[in-house]
Length: 242
Image (cartoon, rainbow, N blue to C red; front, side, top):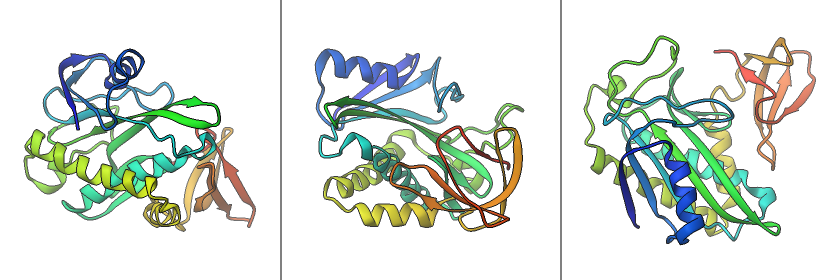
């Protein structure tokens, strides 16, 4: 594994993408930044992190073994890798669809996966990860954010913790490479935040009550509504009301 450490960068995903384009670095290369000036989340969301307090990094993979249509398997695997690590530290860990990591009702980590496709196969994937580790306070506009340190009362050494997290992530990636798809899909389903619990959702400006039953092969969320209707939603089509 090659580690690229940066004091400051706009986004580790942007930097990693530039490496793939210019150098074709070895698989498993990790780009770690102490400070991101333009960290990104899903869609137009930004990822805010106090410099030197958390883990913000990207992993470069070449998942040629996966058809492009099955790219959500990577989202499942990365989410599970992070949850595997978090469970070594505390309880109440779950995955809020599609790939936010929760401790109780608070968000401790987020993932941004960006893929390049060649033909009908995945050529490269950049897995961007932000893990709130030691940050002691968060801005008021992030009421559901939490750090692992706030939950456990411990302070985590960044380098040692990074290697522990990477071990969990690479283990799940290897499971995917070895074709353990059914196991990954079942583990992801079992770990979904509020799975099978009645919750409030919002879609198309309408708020309704429903419960998550799982995800389909494309990673879309499967919901059962209170009136018995079953619905399928893609990313950004529905949000859970916390």
